[in-house]
Length: 274
Image 1 (cartoon, rainbow, N blue to C red):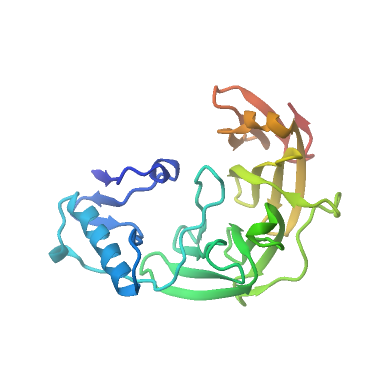
Image 2 (cartoon, helix red, strand yellow):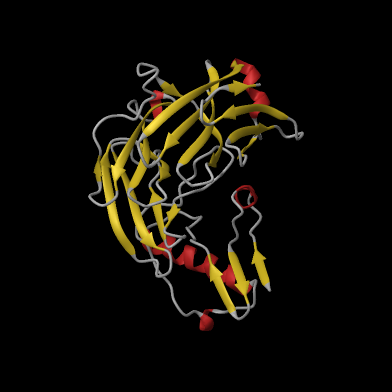
């Protein structure tokens, strides 16, 4: 039997996240940060107190703790859409990449790869500039990132780049749609799904003053396509809460909140029916 304890934040519901989970005699507490300010000592005390409070809700006490792991770094599980979808695992969930926030330090970005069983950091990747997590290939060879040339003040214009996870180095060149190599990328991610083989990431974007689009990224070959959608400007509000899914015959569907299919995209030809 599985029991969950949630603190009640909206992020928990959006990301299917719980402060603590109990399965039989074992209680696991999720990664916990401090809510208060102060120095590292004060924040550590606050984080541990929150973790123990979560465990206590499921019948455990500090005397029952078997293992803890502290990561003295300002990183977290990366969120890829504005609705709170989180990603970053591979190797059947045994590896996870954590990321720093673009709002904390725009001159430097840090990614930390950890073993999810032991929580031991395996590799730290440091990039000069403002980057955010985008995706990781299913084979764990590449980390895809969004580079913001203008930093946070530069708005939502970005460039897709990739990092070799073995060397920790940026791979040369931006990843662009070769049919529109000069088009600038700009928008806010609303939803995402993956191809059934875990190769293609399909991300729906609100294009702001421009039009909506789906960014299709092949995480094995570094190939990308931008699929234009017919909604522009304020009409893009129709896409809030849209769900993406890929059917067995490789059609990407965009389904609205009411259950109506708003668009179908053939992922072989990238043609759109809306």
